[in-house]
Length: 258
Ligand SMILES: Cc1cc2nc3c(=O)[nH]c(=O)nc-3n(C[C@H](O)[C@H](O)[C@H](O)COP(=O)(O)OP(=O)(O)OC[C@H]3O[C@@H](n4cnc5c(N)ncnc54)[C@H](O)[C@@H]3O)c2cc1C
Figure 1 (cartoon, rainbow, N blue to C red):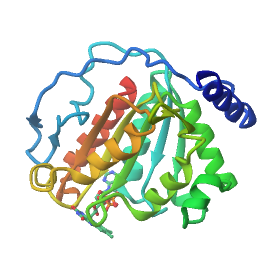
Figure 2 (tube, rainbow, N blue to C red):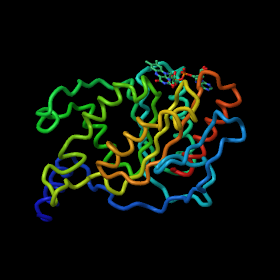
Figure 3 (tube, rainbow, N blue to C red):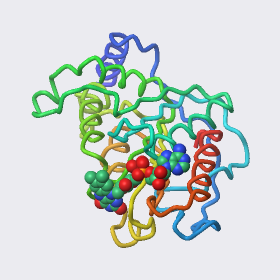
Figure 4 (cartoon, rainbow, N blue to C red):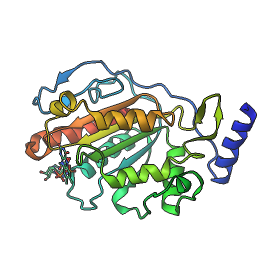
């Protein structure tokens, strides 16, 4: 069984021209586990739910160079969107510290909706999706940014994840005992979500349900570990200084590849 699964894995990645799927988690900065409302204002809540959030830019050492994939998940291509600015800030920080970075801009992708289980299991991803899959294979750390829409990620981002994380790519079609093998093992992730409501409200009243779903049902399911998140609440009412502070926080996270 082991041999079969490994051969499946090797064959898939050889076909896709990806030399190697990183299976090792590199040394990550240890973030202090603080639950604090940022001193710049209580709206800037940094969460520490299981697998969630940490204080930006406080890592005690710089990690080694990592392959970072930034998935800018705002469906609106307008350059004026704050999520794009946050993605760019993370990229700036990461590049400045010598990390390798690729960016996927959801708003610029053309791909169909997945409409059937048959397509999910046996269908071929279109070229744009295959490029995204190759980048996810290449990455050791994936950063996903999106605005909260109707309590969850935008439908277009969910549609891309449905297309990308197919059986055979994200996990094995064969099972090892009861469970499929997770092909994204060894990767870490950061989720950055902006929203109209205050961050504490999303966390305490809504229990960050959609964020937890992305963490557990999607990313963990395919093997991601050490999934952290940053919630940018009350976006519309942030002052200019607060928005700049958030951008600086994202640069710091990028520098730490955190
Ligand atoms: C369909 C839909 C459903 C929604 N559902 C919910 C929901 O369920 N719950 C909820 O809480 N919210 C909801 N919202 C609100 C949504 O979450 C926020 O509008 C979104 O998170 C804001 O992110 P953005 O990138 O679109 O910000 P933008 O609206 O683009 O920008 C926010 C602010 O940042 C400023 N800005 C942009 N770029 C920069 C920059 N480079 N530097 C400094 N400032 C900048 C803008 O001028 C603006 O003032 C919904 C919105 C929509 C459209």
